[in-house]
Amino acid sequence: MFAKPSKLIFRRRPRVAATAALSVLLLWGAARPAGAAAITNVTVVNVTPSSFSVIWRAVDSLPSIAVFADAGGVTNLAGRVGVEVFPHNTGNPDLTAGYERRQGQIALRQKTRTLGFAMVRVTGCRPNTTYYYRLTSTTSGGSAANYPLSGPLPSVTTERENTFVVSAQQLIIDVPGVDVEGRVVTLTHPNASHSLAAVVGDGVGTNQVFFNLNDLFALVSGGNFTPIGPQDFAVNVWGPNQADAAQQFSLVFNNSFTVAQPTVASMGTEFVAFTIGSTIVRAGQTSSVPITYSSSAGIVDLTINLDMPAGHLTNLALTALSPEVDPATATVTALGGNSFRFHLAARAGQFMLGSKTIAQFAFRAVSNQPSAFVPMTLRTITATKSGGAALNNLYANAGRIVVVANEPLLEAELADGGNRRMTLYGKPWMSYAIERSSDLGNPNGWTHVRHFPLTSMMVVVDHVAPNDRTGFYRAVEFQPDPPVIDPPDPSRSALVYGRTNLQYTLVSSPTLSGVLTWTPVLNYTLTNSFRYLTLPAPTNTLFYRVQRN
Image: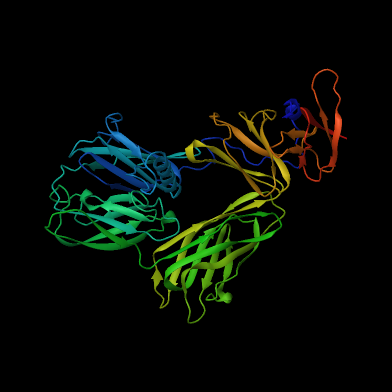
């Protein structure tokens, strides 16, 4: 049986080594400061006699809408109409209904928001009635952007009535690319009064989008859209950074009574999709991330313009090239500031086709800079087919490099089920502590939350401060003096912390009352700031502590 009095761990607040540094200040609900998210591409969609939706672009922000009865915005209809943010139909149908389905919908909404798209649905409207609206997008830093900035409010008039549909058709479109779930897709017809909008992964597969064409309404006659004969529909897949993909689909309508007749089609028979990977690297070391590539068309030239914070990486190069890539064309060019260009071209008579790792982005992390997150943000992509024609269906994701120097880095996120999670990046074989403060103006207001060893360059810490509404957090190196011992695990392995290169003795006592007799158990020298000790099997109750020699 083992016991360890808490005073042995928190007898006083441990001192922090001089090299420890504040890594990140975190405020729950405001994880990173940001400017106001500009609202663009505002489009009214999915208009029915009782509802309408609005979609727009705004970088990673929370959307909202205010609905009015007049263009001046005097009569607010709050409470008389309903508002749903990021509305979905069913989410991923492959997930079990209930908790898993709800969690899937939460993740899908977050993907749409992260991609820079916003969607709200207004319900409880009256048929053939004009409504006016004002949009707001609020970043996680609290900055808000409004649309319109001034002048009369934009309006939308609900449809007059639903009418009988003879040829009821549904369109399911496969959307190729890397992680396309959450993208907004619009469908339009020149004789329909408004467009339809749907989200990739809602009600279908994670790479599909679903449209019920009965939801279109006729532009002239009113009522549901009931064409006859072949009809062309324009579909536009919204992409990040305005990188949209458009294509036309043709369906045939007739007078035969049909219910939910499905048509499955593919978006972009020719496409290029690629991903630049992510990694963690120590300052001063070399590393690389894969560039994975998938294309349904033969590409002879590929140019990628991206932003990446300068000053953290050097010796940039494209290496480990796929055999069809001409090494003389594989270049990384600094364009000034934070802008860079990757270029790949095929050898003469060859082309880049299929799915593969086409190259490695190699680099060395500089050693004279603080620890940093180095994100890669894609700006423009150009893919040229053999013959010189450009390919327009382009899909891409870019990762990031985490450079670990002397300072730890701390990152917060809200995981599934509301779990507050932190990821700490630091030096291997160093111990760290997470500290909290509610007042940044008080330098002595930091309190110890949790400590742990780091055997790799990162550790994920779950369930941090579940009841904390607002708090600032930081990570520091943990080299306590006096030393600290954590309770042993079932294998009788105890974790001890202290100062590197100092000598310590593990001692034990059968009691904590009366005259204490501490018996030496083990002498050791710390080569790191922590060490695992295997405790001997006792014949009775023992209490342990560690003392510095």
